[in-house]
Length: 369
Image (cartoon, rainbow, N blue to C red; front, side, top):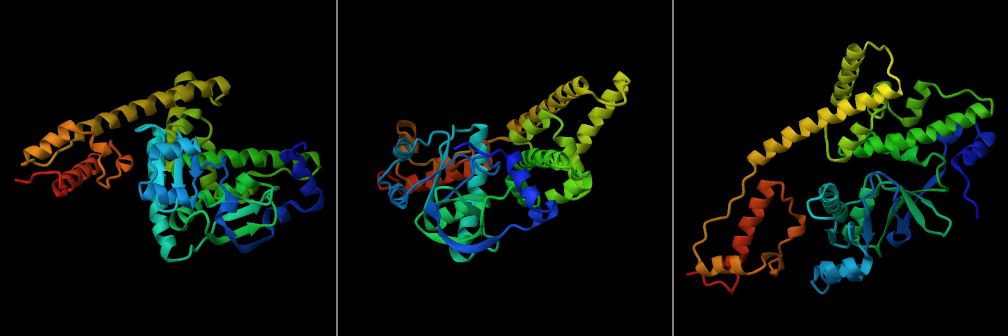
């Protein structure tokens, strides 16, 4: 069956409805749905490559009947995150950018799951039916993963269920992402770019049908943001260097980053005696932005490196020292989650080292004389 393009879908909707109506009025209901019938949207910028495991395998992992490597093999989970009842395992390459970003998401999911375990979510995830009778998440991936962690994939929970897939799917996702203070800048900027592509198709469809094109103010209204916020997104989306910086973990606020970009643009115009930046000019500006951001990142990395310090508590037991030197500490059954450690965070590492010494001293294998 040939897939209908977004432009064809929008044209069909616009023939039967006023543009304002179809953007505002989309029927939905609140229903209790089994989590094993709900699936994440892999194209959502809030989604990391997760593998949802069965409640049986989750129990076997927690009770140490299955190892992390065995689960990775079963679910082909290399470079992904395994999620199940009471377990979430980062299987990305250790210390990579993806591993660090996944760890941040994991921390927030576990924190949210603790709330889910004792109370209902105030704002439930939104989903829509798929052709095979299941459901796909539109918004609320983090909340969905928290439900899995708290109650397991065989449990049921409440969802806001649209009767059909929204015509402007990415725009709906952006509307939620843009108002969230806890989301990373990269996800917001990616969501904006995806939604703008949809709105451009909508604008083209309107003009072809002889209807009024969307104004800037109307576009901002559809996105659910102020004109000031729209201008921030518009400036930052001009240059790939900004997107890549956020993708690699830069957390500078949009307002501050916008000022930084405008300053580089203004300096370039003065140096090259131009009033309006053309395509070639913007390529040169992008290079300057990339170079400046790389210099900032290097200075920050050098500063962090100087501050990084790890300390091992004083060891008074020769047996303990011998064990640490001879054995692979990571493989000892001590109940320590080494995969969850951020090795760039010296405070976190020192805390784990103290816990290691405490666990080893409590072990019957150690002579504590």
